[in-house]
Amino acid sequence: MSGPPTLALANVSKSFGAVRALRDVSLELFPGEAHALAGENGAGKSTLVKTLAGVHRPDSGQVLLGGEPVTFAGPADAQQAGVAVIYQEPTLFPDLSVAENIFMGRQPRTSLGRIDRKAMHAQARRLFERLGVTLDPEQPARGLSIADQQLVEIAKAISRDARVLVMDEPTAALSGNEVARLFSVVEALREQGCAILFISHRLDEIFSLCQRVTTLRDGAWIASEPVEGLTHDDLIRRMVGRDLDALYPKQDTTAGEVALQVERLTREGYFTDVSFQVRRGEIVALAGLVGAGRSEVARAVFGIDRWDAGSVTVAGRPLPAGSPTAAMGAGLALVPEDRRQQGLVMELSIERNIGLTGLRSLRRGVTISRAAERDRARDWALRLQLKFGRLSDGVGVLSGGNQQKVVLAKWLATEPSVLIVDEPTRGIDVGTKAEVHRLLSELAGQGIAVLMISSDLPEVLGMADRVLVMHEGRLTAEISRAEATEESVMSAATGRAA
Image (tube, rainbow, N blue to C red; front, side, top):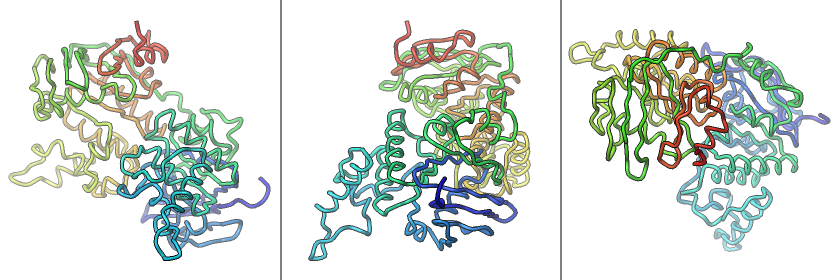
């Protein structure tokens, strides 16, 4: 690269107590380049982003702007210097318009000092034209898709003349078409000389969008190199420090008796006439496109939602509709899709979250035994190789992969006979994915029946003994492991199966 980078970190270190989040990390972001930041959960990516954004100040090392050392006293300083961060979940003012969100606190004024809405809307339209997208500046922010909210945040950034755009997991909640549109916006910004830092667990996106990639591992810089000539295996090896030849470590097991029987289950408006069974020792995947009704079936089976017709039987024991307590008593456990909103109480500690499903067993008289709660949490933390500071720490300080392990620990502590896992590896890195896959395989090997809902086709094909495919609320296919291919699953998921 000719000329100095727009923004750089030089030998930056940052610690939080005894935890060294960054260790002598360097990074260079050049104009007109999309630069990927790769690493497992807990590798230091979030701390690096917050250092660039002025949230954290380095303990040692320098932040360089245009080749000159700079100190950001806070996020406002970073924004003033042209650094903007686009987070996975934008935070717009829902009751204000798109244009008002873009120019909040900087609205153009008339000669009388009033907000010039006509000028504001015109400026917003020019920003969207510059990005190559169509969005109504007068539309309220409430009701916008995540993808459109991100475009508003990007428009806000370039309205402030941002020279560096940091995109932190921007595609996690987007559809394929929305990802393609976002990538076209990134290409437009690159052509205009903006430096892009792109963070994603989806390696295909890194290879299709970025020119260079920097890899972190355990807070340390591993490599900065061109994407061209690099393979997926090369990048994974740098991220995890080893060859990851067993991302889907599926054990061969012999299926036992039927543990979960679902017969003609129907919930009006969500799914119709769904029947299947899961046997002890097998992993059955429930596949399909978003909106096919997979999560709704899982919620009904577990009793969160009431079904209108049909039956659910666990080990020959019929379950009543709409009773999670009865489902838990029969040996069911549900790891939900949204771990933060449905799987964890973010305000509570790691140990308290793990203990929530077993409060009766932890009770000593009329109080909960803290010692018993801590022993239970420590046991599961060791078994699942949880990375944490103290068990009394808030669960919110953990990485996404470790939060998922806490949810798994909470439910595995109930010693279930049937484990339902909804998108078990969404939003976690490849190393932790392998650990979760290994755990699911071990649980099946111990005789637990696993029902896995996943939108990740390689995960479905790599881990399932059988694949059940849903389309628009109905089961359209049951495919054996030997016969399951991406083509056969997608054909059934789009309603084209014979």
